[in-house]
Length: 161
Image (cartoon, rainbow, N blue to C red):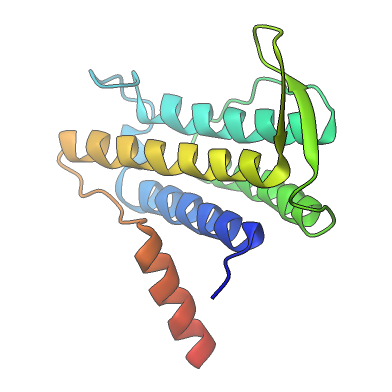
């Protein structure tokens, strides 16, 4: 079965939403708590992923990215939802092999396909959801499971209903 970039991005959307709902349910009070970890707080990780998703999408469509901050998992979920809807619409309208020329934060120019950039964005999000799970466990809260196989299983069950 061929996987499309839209499918891979759908996994990213699912994993992000699932983790943020987990934070709302289990760790609302820990969102801003300063801890010793890879990032200084759960909020810092969430804001980082949100900003990077926006940064890569901005590079794809030729706009300037800005700073995006959140105050709660719910607010983060709402902001991710809006951004992810925009990205999904974009992916449904563009050739995934189209090359995008962009500049890094250091001013270097590079070129990658939309597919490569989305693969990077998804991989980046997966990595940081792992950070979040570890940070939650550090606080005595079970981490949320957002592995790709669970996405496939959940979607398989939905399609059988």
